[in-house]
Image 1 (tube, rainbow, N blue to C red):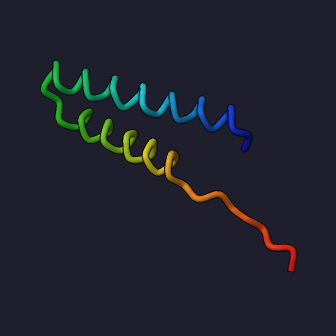
Image 2 (cartoon, one colour):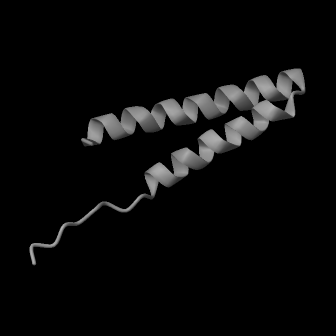
Length: 57
């Protein structure tokens, strides 16, 4: 996956998390806050994921 695609996906994840948090807090539906937390976790794992380094041995 190239760098641009990774950043677009990460931006979509954080936007989805913020949207779910906002909707969950305004309606009082806790399930949307949980979904937002899952999107945020996916975002942070995407930011700090290790790159695969293939050895030539």
